[in-house]
Amino acid sequence: MDDEEDYGAAPGGERALTEVAWETASVATQLAAILDTIEHHRGTEKPMSPSRVAHISAMIDDLAVTLTAAALGIRRRRRMLSARWYEEVCRVGEGGFGTVVRAPHRSTGQHVAVKTPRRSGPGGHEVIMDLLREACFLAACRAHPSLLVGFRGMVRRVDTSSRGEEEYSIVMDYIDGSSLAHILHERGQPFPEEEVRRIMRQLLRGASAMHENGIVHRDINPSNIFVDGDDEGIIKIGDYGCAKSTAEARPPFCVAGTNGYMAPEVLVEDAAGHGTAADMWSLGCVMAELLTDTLMFDGDEDAEQLCRIFDVLGVPEDEEALRPRVLEDLVRQQRVLQRLVGHRQDLLRRMVPEEMLSLDGFEVLRGLLACDPRKRLTAHEALRLPWFTEHAVTTKSWSAVLLQMAGRVLGWLRATTVPWGACLCH
Image 1 (cartoon, helix red, strand yellow):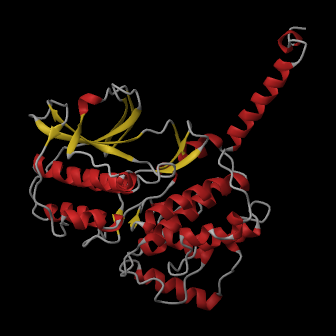
Image 2 (cartoon, helix red, strand yellow; image 1 turned 60 degrees about the horizontal axis):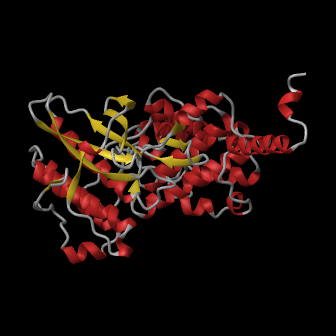
Image 3 (spheres, one colour; image 1 turned 90 degrees about the horizontal axis):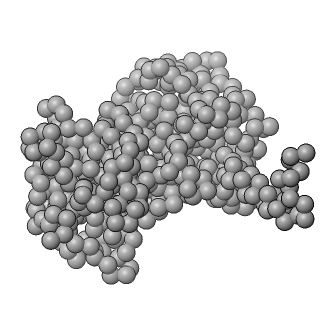
């Protein structure tokens, strides 16, 4: 008998698909069907049974397979991964959500990251549904492993410390590197434009992949962007705990994200909701931070944050651009003040001058930081601008290039007739 636990199928949710329909459905449709199943159960306010968790896990697994192996006719069995397959060697992250550990596979030695949420308090059963939602988005992003942190599977174990309750974890790609936030902190100075272009090209490709499948990340910021040290500085977007699908029947409307990277329509809880454009704003904030080594809009509260945005970019004159459910008076006051005294149009350029960012680069930054979400660049549109199209693709970071150059110099020195090490001794 395998270490896996085999489960039978459990009933689906509101938008359960037939087997044939599932095979032919788009990624966005499959993703929405799984999310609707989770939210349908959440509405019952009952804990999710192990068989239901296993069934949803199988649906998520099928979604991942659809993206990576369907063309080859590969189908995996509807089973969950076994915790016994992995050896937890060290903790790599911990917070209010729970813990993330690095764990090599006992047979292959391949390292993965295992994320286990906390299950404490009266709402502990909600955590499982939140974890399943995150697994859905990881699985839907699996087709782009070079740009997005990928999904490996769900793990089930019996937690002996909590009266034998079931405990679940997500197994995902392990990135042997650092977060962009850590690199920004350690570096302590702005990135050169060429390096910013290399990073932004990868981030926009990752965002494009998400958005094509109807996924809105909702919390893109340097702490959720990772630089893979084993893969020549490849950038990956991770942590989908706040994500939503534009195709799910009842997407979460609550405000989510990190304050300094929230779009204006998120801060005012726009009546029309917010979609992929909110991610593009966050990417614009990341781009500005890379160039200036400073968070461009850093308010302590939502109102202050919005004022700082308006101070730099102005208030959209079209009242349909922002339809606030909160901070409505503030938006109205700022718009009236702007009409009376005017707004200087060059403030963003003053903060990011031409010696820091070329005209082509500024076109991208300004397009990402458009206050009106209807006028904001999409990822696809941004990648088609001259800043990206008229420059060669560079996959290696400057540090990797410098290391490569140093290696070539050492190789040349070793090839000389006089041992170069002997020269250092005299």
